[in-house]
Length: 132
Image 1: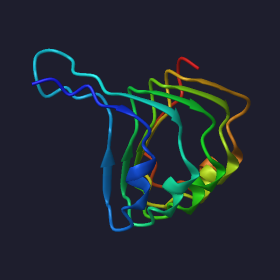
Image 2: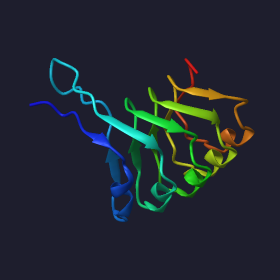
Image 3: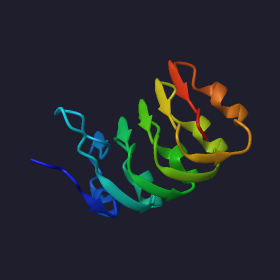
Image 4: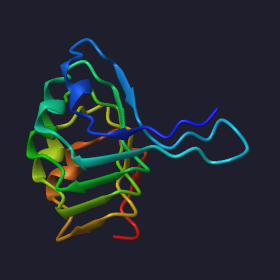
């Protein structure tokens, strides 16, 4: 039973009470079953104010991380690794929840400097930016 979902992630952004949003690679079987979501991370995702886990890894997402990401103040885990994201890491990422524990952005095309605001994430346990 394969799970090769594709298309835009925009329809998910209307789920205002959603706490966990995961569209990443599925590893629950012996073979890798990959999703193939494309396009940019829509700014509408920032209206998902109750989300604590946002897992967008292992897709084909492009463009930059939206600056409105800082409005997700309940976010504890953000996984956007292994996509085709580009641009710099927005300073607004430092406005994420002080409960933010895991931030994985490796395997993209990000560039620039790490914003000082990252130091506001006082409970950050894992932060991966390698392979950019």
